Image 1 (spheres, rainbow, N blue to C red):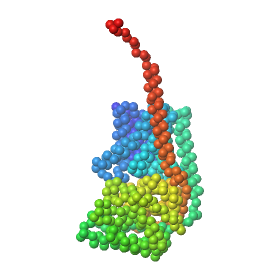
Image 2: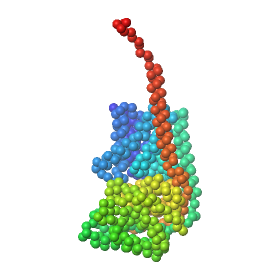
Image 3: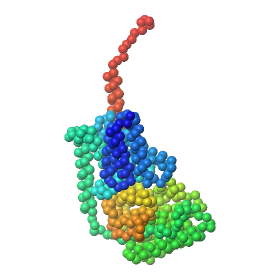
Image 4: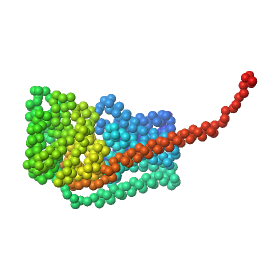
Length: 510
């Protein structure tokens, strides 16, 4: 039988979780975990556990829909697997609380939440991490410079666990309310420290004028660029498509020349915005290198080279040309997005390359690569002073994906220039402050121009990486061990306390 009051908290928590996933309202995530955890700890019957699982699954189905590029049965299966990973911390919490007591177990839930998010990210990416819901709370976001996004996840889950313990005891000042006071005090101290960090950020360093440009939306009919990227071009279509692509090349090169003459020292193109057949690539690169040398600029080109007739026809690249007209970086994307891109893309293996220049150390990656903090951390370790990130998105994810990439700037202490097709182009400083933004889907010119500070801010995350997350994994294992030991002790005591069985004598045997 479903219990009425826990069901109310469950529905409220599941609804807030779905909303927090789809829109940047930071308090929703904190409240969602409070209500979900209260419901999880309140249900006792098996029916309540099933009802909790169903509500969590529906919440994931709603919240995940904009960001998952699959449909049909696959979407429902992936959502079920994702919901199962979210349910794990609640199950761990129930196991530990029932055996080790609420005061000690107040840390079980945050440890489990971080551990599950972190281990899931090793297999997929950091998409749907609850930490990203805190975009906009700049002081709290600074935690990423120390512990990565995992530190933010821990604080949210820790507050939920401590708040529920106090809630169950009427918020009376006792041993059960002290964990909430500690959690709130630590969070307040973190926000104060983050506020000071941002307030003391220097503004007198060197800077560079950058610009991002986008392709015209009316050059290709819908579906044409997809066909070209997939290599589905017949012999009869090869020449007319090549002519169309040549006009696209002219657009980008002329636009880059215009921005260079307006003062830009770095011009960035979005991911997969410029396509070129492999046979025509050399001629195009000769034009691009000549432009960079003539205008004395860095030209960072998100481009796709098409190998017609091959099983994997699409090479997704970032090519950076220096002011001397030399190709300084040629990087191939290493993390294809599941589905369409994974089926057609050649995967790179070279890793992030860092280019020392008179203007600072420049590095870059492409779109989905930046959804893996441990991968982008390589740039932070190398002291990157300007990170270039071409991306290609779709309308429903353009905000959340941009928010995710702002955390990469904070984690690694480096400014990011993000050039987006069908999304938000932006410039961000090492503290996560947005210097400029342009929406490719908005009316008017989508060119972004910004003055970007060049420099690296050392961070603990860049040095230690995911150490905090691994400590949470170890802490979770310890908590599970404590719970298992408590179960064993209970079983031993129960056996000792049980009355001895009466001894019977078989008189016939005598």
